[in-house]
Length: 149
Ligand code: ZN
Image (cartoon, rainbow, N blue to C red; front, side):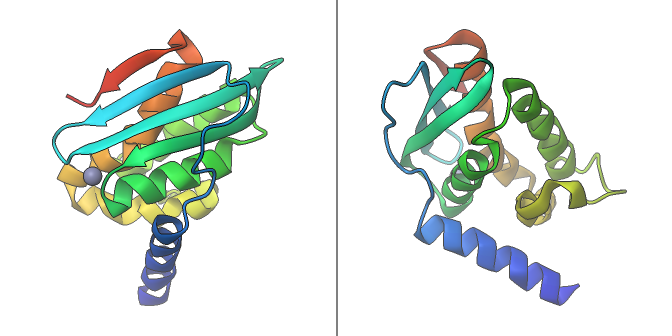
């Protein structure tokens, strides 16, 4: 168990130090801004969707280690998936992180399970889900602003 916890910590540290897809992408079909005033996390998510597939995705912004690592892993995970698949992943991720999915403990989520420990810190749940809420806003409404408040 402590080995797993250590691995999870490594994943978060790694994605915080070297975030994947930390850039504006070319020909984005929608962009959304996310704001978590509770912690001061702000980010912008760019997506290019073609024929219902997330062809490319990137993000920019600043925030705490959890929000940044989560945004990095989110982009890394949903790239190449359909909009529907990304939506389902968010549902599973959200259940895991809010403690509703203790049974499977997010194991079907692969590296995203690294955030399972966040449920012990309810104040950080918004940090970990900010990028996902922002992605959802981009996919559903096009350009818009979401706030966790
Ligand atoms: Zn935060």
